[in-house]
Image (tube, rainbow, N blue to C red; front, side, top):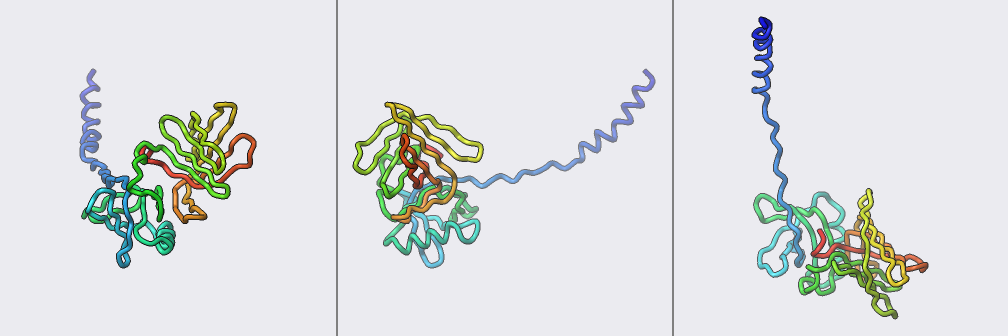
Length: 218
């Protein structure tokens, strides 16, 4: 019992030392926004005007090269503004938006007028032969040149490497869609999307194309 006070006194410097340790500060991450809108070039800058808004943001890139060079190439081939779907972080001034993820960039199509975008989970398509697959919470619809539209339920599987797999075995048919991250360029329109797509229906040869998330999937 006589040792207890001595032990208590011995531990006091340890408690005091703990109290003087500086707190570790974590810098708050900049908020990000997912926006769709018109992208135009003004001098050396890219300006984004979100759909339905009058304000604009100066688009900044994290590094030289991709996707700035691809954006410039598409702009050179497309008259007028480009439609872009992206995620970016706001700069402190609120005037600039630093690109974090490019989902889709195109010089043709409905753009801001696409009323079904918010309900869309995923859109994938390819050429030669043409095919298009749209995925919503109600299922997926496959369209091919010369064939009736095919509506199917589906199962989704996320793979460890970040890839996605969508499959269906309804109506005696097996459909598989594999999606892998990576900037993908449509070889006909020049449009850029953030996923590479590979589609296989039954025993037919696989079809390749590009894909991007819709407004219902982030």
